[in-house]
Image (tube, rainbow, N blue to C red):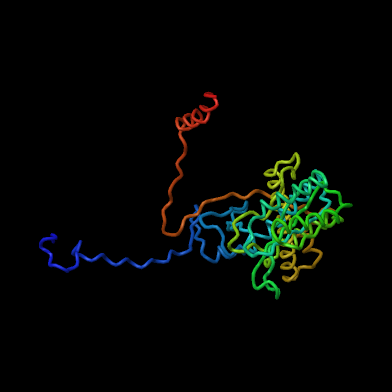
Length: 336
C-alpha cells in the first residue's frame, strides 16, 4: 500500500505475511562414531575422569582401545594433576642442568581485581638485580580460597618466585627491600623471602600446591600461571624441556598402569583357586627371570564424527599446490 492510499494515522505494513515462528532447537546427542564404526556414547566420554573432554577426537591405544582426550585446562581437577607433574619434571630437569634456585619469594596482593603481575614483577626484579646482582626466576601464580574472615569472600592472587643466582645469605636483606618496593608498586604489605634448603622440597611444594582445587585460577583469569624470566632455562629449549617432561610423565603413568593391571590379574587368578605361587609365576614371571615392563607405545590420534553426520574426507595437497606454497614461502628471502 502506498503512502497516498494509506489512511492517516494507520500503521505502516511492510509485508502482509507474518514471519514464521522459529522451530525449537533440537538437542544434539553427545554420541560419536569412530572411523571403524564403533559407537561411543556419553558414558565413554565420562570414563576418562575429565568433566569436559574434547569432542571430535580420541586416542587409539596400541591394543585398539579408544580413550577420550582431556580438556587440558588448569581449572580441570583431572587435567591439572598431569600439568602439575609435567611442571615438576620441567623444574627438576632445569635444576639438574642449570643448578637449583637459592631463594624463594612470595608476593601477595590486597585488591581482588589486581591483574598487573607482569609489569610490577618486572619492576621489582629490576630493583633487586640492581641491589644484589643478576639472577633469573620462575614465577607461579596461585589464589587464596576466599574463606578467611578478613577476605570478604574474595579470592586474591599471590605469586611464588624461585630465584636462581640470588645469594641465600642475603635473603633477609632481599626480604626488606622487596617488601618496601612491592608496597610502593601494589600497596600490598606482605612479602616473604627465604633461602631454599633442598631442591626436592621445592619440587614437592610445587606439586602439592598446583594440584589443589582451592588454589586453582578463578573463572575470570585468562593468563598464564607459570611465568619464567628470560634466561631461566639457560641453554635448554623450553619446548623441548616440556616435551621431555611430558614423555617422562607418560612413561611413569604407563608403568603404574601395567603394575595395576598385573595386580588385578593376580587377584583374579587367586580368586579362581589358583595357588599364589602359580599365579605369581603366570602374571609376574618366575622369580629368577621376572617379566619386564613393556615399553610404552605412542597412541594415535583419530578423528570422530557425531552420530548422524557423514564423513568429510580430508583433502590432500597436490604437487602443484605444494610447489606453489614452497615458492611463495621462499619469495621474501629472494627479494631481500
